Image (cartoon, rainbow over all chains, first blue to last red; front, top):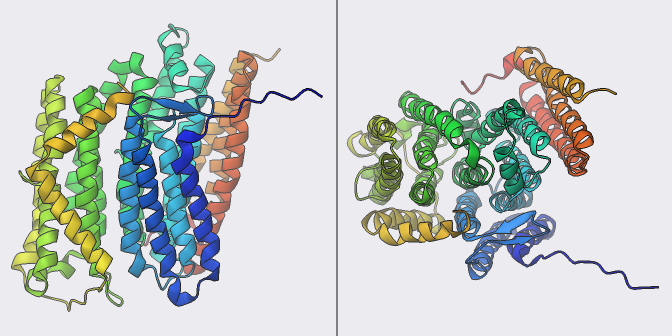
Length: 484
Length: 101
């Protein structure tokens, strides 16, 4: 019998993905053999997984795009950089969980769900094809639905999960319906082929192309909570366990924005005029909803949910600019956002005590008198989120606003500037509570060295990136090598 | 022979029924899950029709992915619904109001 010639698929670029998948399963099974008081080791193992995956991705990050599995997977500098952000976001969220989740049922599942969700995001940022993108999105989404409802004895946790699930599935359906039309016009799921097919589709397929474009954008907009597809965000953020809120607020947003950029650059270059118009209006609406609704919130998790929406609105300016500066600005913004947002959530988690979650703005009153260190860190994060100059958040805004102005979106940049002034109000109000109000509740902080280190490191990063933003901006520009 | 537009019309009808059902239904969360299934199935009809008329197999392969993921999605959805029911003792849509918004 003749030996059959089988072309083995190239799998080397997927080594970090395979490593994470294996480790998630190891944690899932290994946790069964751990006694209750040793369960925290699953968490340490999950953090170690993120660190090792980071080294793997860093060591094999290519200078140009490498494809695998017959073009169903791509590894380029853009994906590598996004993956590093995703690892950092997940690892920090796991650190915040170590103490918070230890009394819940099924600790091991919790960490392995976080890793599987991270795997989904890694696949998303590396997908050059609608099939891969869909599978990555679903892997991420299914894990986050479960994580949001993880405190299954708490009504608001399961209610948040239910709402998130229903709206998330609707968004998936809309996205798929859009993909089916793009497939119908072009006969392919590959981003580049679909893009070429759209460019040559002519007037007969025009309606289907536009319908597909709008539906795909709507589906992806849901994932990154662009208004008017943001409805799920405040409820899911408020109901979820706080570390899960921290997890959802950064890493999936990075993945969603990266795939949005990839789809716009590869699939829709010939629809540039149309999508810039759509995004301009969505950006204004997103900034308005995020920054205005946040003012009315008394719960800090809900406030940070609207704050996330507002920040996504600002980041969209980089996407609208559509040049190298704009896309680099998105990465710069998300990098800085990772540190300041994770830091703020770390302080919120540290303030949790029996029965009281440390979630209401009133709970922060007089924090500076009790613990000046946390108060200072929280103040830095909030000023940075507000975009006060010479903290990290300022440079994120500066880069995307400048990119928008350079490409002729002056009025949009002015609008964004006005909304960031509105946004500064509700961030600084929390600082007022922390520094100028009298203590109303008794503080009782969680003692956890890793979490205290997280607060210190993120606070230093926010200040450091504020003083020396140059290297970060250059790294982000270099990371665009794969797509433009 | 049935033209492509007929298949697309059926799929569009199913998709619309799914969306409308999702928003107009005020009674039962299970109906929402059915509406989500309906939306995903309308996508599959679209893909199958396009795949046949384009003579391209990749659309039909995508259908298998959609079917598989839809099954796991409903499993997760039902699990969340059970957890919710245990806490709330109701799956009435109007009762989902603990979180305002």
